[in-house]
Amino acid sequence: MDERPEACPACRGTVLIRSGHACGRQRWKCKGPGCGRQFTRTTPRGMPMEVKRHAIELYCLGLSMNAVAKRVGVSAQSMLRWVRDHAHAHCPKPEPARGGTAVVEIDEVWHFVKKSPENSGSGRPSSDGSGR
Image (cartoon, rainbow, N blue to C red):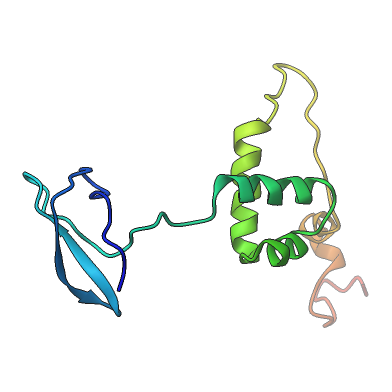
């Protein structure tokens, strides 16, 4: 049987009663004034912040995201979310300079997007008689 929770997670009220079971776990109901919340979880969700910091540190040292996720015991998607949250909080994007030069990166897809129509086609002879 689960231990009795100390307080309601919503209102921090201490008057709690048992209110059945959900998925094999004891359900608790808050009898605080105006609350009435029902809950089953008595421990906080997620990994502790210290574990997240350690995982991000390992990732920054060069371990792959999948390797860090396996070592910490979480999914790769969770690890990706932690890295993105860390980047948004600690590494802001630089603002482009006004009137400055814009850097554009072009990859091989640009060749296909900007290809001239006369060099592409279905392979059938053209109807203009030029023989191309």
